[in-house]
Image 1 (cartoon, rainbow, N blue to C red):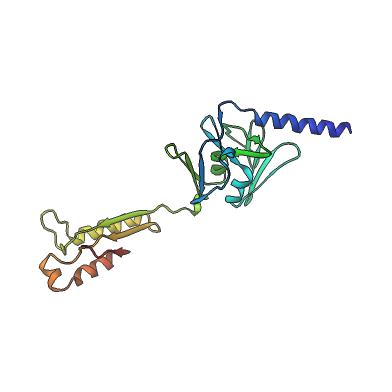
Image 2 (image 1 turned 180 degrees about the vertical axis):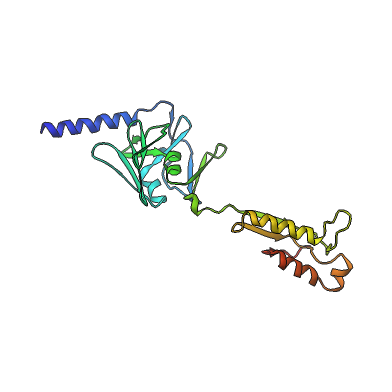
Length: 226
């Protein structure tokens, strides 16, 4: 009986330590997107504590394909693919290695709220905050995110040869191909149209030389133009 009372007292003390709040703001219209999907929780469970957003641990873990649960000793665990995050009243450990924790978890209306950024970044995700929309966006893990570069031209008008301000397709195509080497898996080369009619060579050949040059460059799509 005495042992049970001691354990209960320990859990109550840890809970009190975890739920003490300083500059916390409750009930604001904050939002969270995880890989483009809204985290569907009431705004009362999204807490801004001195610039750090706390969210329900179970919902965030589910959105990140992780597992969240509370230990009998009061510690909070997030587990995913060999990684374990352990929250206490004043610390965070990642696979038992200390991680900087700027705000502690809080227990609100029967649910544990954990720091969004600390949790997501520890699980190799990227986090962006939009102060205007009060929206946090979580992407990742970062190994699953591809940076997208979009390169576009328009109104080429068959200017295949270099002349005056026109670089010609040899230089233009070389530039576009060089840019693609910087991000081979995430680069799109697009045309806004009006590529053919203009120069004599392109016009009389119905744009065939331009089409060949575009294919050699690796254009991904083209609009008709006006």
